[in-house]
Length: 286
Image (cartoon, rainbow, N blue to C red; front, side, top):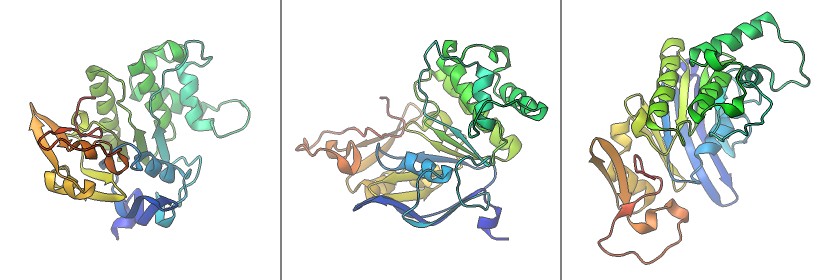
């Protein structure tokens, strides 16, 4: 059996461009069941665009993409999606369990009456992320970490084969980062769910990552963290000297000021011996 037949997400020569601007191209990828793929790169490189393509919200301009053996499509129950965290207003008229329920029937018109099977799935998803105790609380009154747990429960409600996470640790403190990472890791290990994890900060999940997809300047590199997160590889991607160093157990990427925002940076004259953190740095404090 071929690798693509065994994968939960497959890409062949995939690419997205807008006019003359190429975000990424020639992407060949087979995501195995239970694999944890971290997607890294500077702002605007096309990381979120990749997630949109898998969700069926962005058409490829080249190549092919399939999810669980089928073309991407909106409302696919094979894909769970955890969006970037945004604080919800305290007056939002939704309970935590209502938000999870939208993962099951949010694509349908009207309220309808939920079946016993749907109620069971909602309860199981809330339990899986440790959110049962505040299932009936207004979502806007929950902490950022609690809201993120509920968003993950929403993404898991359909028992997806692929879980897409767009900066799921953003704005969370260290304790909640660890808790959210552990939830996602447990899901993929126990259920064989493939994880595509877009992040600017790989350190909290570095021990969980199987492979890294680094996108920059219209190019990409795919491989094990030790293969991709090197000075040589990132210097090649950015087209400028970039150093990868370890500081107190944290990976930090540093480069010249011109490389700070990737290929679209405003070019000020560099100071010859000065090095500053790349904004998209792996592990850099922001």
